[in-house]
Length: 125
Image 1 (cartoon, helix red, strand yellow):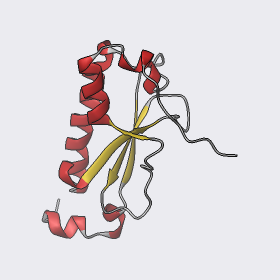
Image 2 (image 1 turned 180 degrees about the horizontal axis):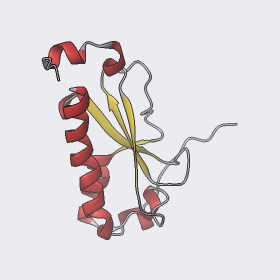
Image 3 (image 1 turned 90 degrees about the vertical axis):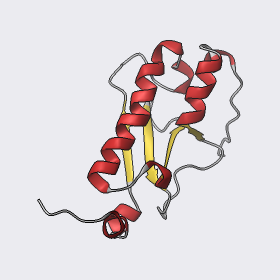
């Protein structure tokens, strides 16, 4: 297996537009609204393990990617978006994207945060 340095990997067009999706294996977590303190280990793994895999496979390191969740989601099976900061297509519009690190922080402060907080959403016509 040939090795390449990080700079050559990161300059490849497919890596610059990197967009990965991580799916939750649990069927009872459909969206951010379902998240509770019991889900913190899963959320931390979806953040840390996925970042490590993406760095190892694609050479995109955590400081070069954003990790977020849409609310409302595109489909109701909890999933996380991993996107290179250099990506031209931005799926993290302010109205729908919530950074996974912020979600974890909110649940650490209050285990039922997403059961009782107001979440503003932008609605189309």
